[in-house]
Amino acid sequence: MATTDKQYDTAVLICRDLFEKKMHDYGCAWRILRVSSLTDQIFIKAQRIRTLQQSKTQRVDEGQFSEFIGIVNYCVMALIQIEKGIADQPDMSAETVLSHYNAQIGIAKSLMQNKNHDYGEAWRDMRVSSLTDLILQKLLRVKQIEDNDGQTLVSEGLAANYQDMINYAIFALIHLENS
Image (cartoon, rainbow, N blue to C red):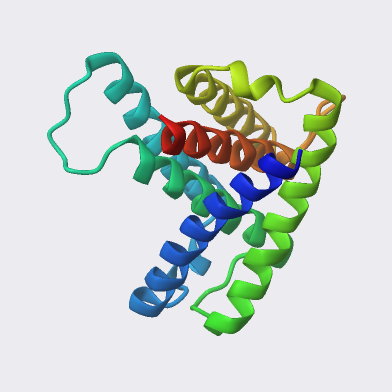
């Protein structure tokens, strides 16, 4: 588990570094996005990864690795939006946003550690393509929950699905980094 924690933290640092640089360039303009818009952004990234995995050719010079980073970061944004609500204008300093980023990643990591314990690190034997499919499945679930105005009868809510997607994307980053 110590190896997983270290690899997880390394992947998070890569994601957070890009997030922080984009915050410098763009501020927190994403704060105006509805959660459903962030869901669609994640869907676009996951669908592109699946297309790259199936076609083996690409015309844009960004591969799966950068798209999985995008999935992690958009999921964190969605979790912040769920917690804080949507703003009419960018309304947070970089320091505040990064504090929220770290908190959301901390929650996702804790969930990963609990599930990883119970599942015996099964993700290590999974293919990146399977992790992609799981992310796409979670996105379809999230879209259905959004279409139901956030109401579920017996299922986990939006936040749990975004946290799972963060973890699947980080597992994919670890696999890609090690291959």
